[in-house]
Length: 143
Image (spheres, rainbow, N blue to C red):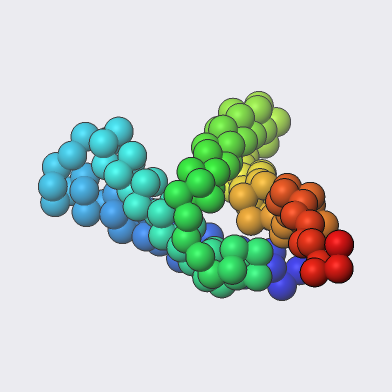
């Protein structure tokens, strides 16, 4: 539960960064909606990866930033966007748009946390990593 709460706090910070970058890019630099939103998402997802690597999933990541983990994190973020949009569109048939949006936020949180916890930052078992290394026999002086 503590990990999920930490992920949630990072998500709130990430949402504020996303909104701030979007508003700045759109209103001040006059980027198009799509360009401003894309820039905001890229910056926010990058910040989220760093915060989650150093806080939420520090044990799993070893507090190290790697390109493969960043790529997986970005890809998992796409899963969250898809889950959010699908939930919003589907739920809007049965509940108010506000209710659908709240359900969509919850759905994307579950998807993003699950993908981050079980794929991006999963703990590597020592047994599995030992199996991937070549077995080297040391010959003793008596052999």
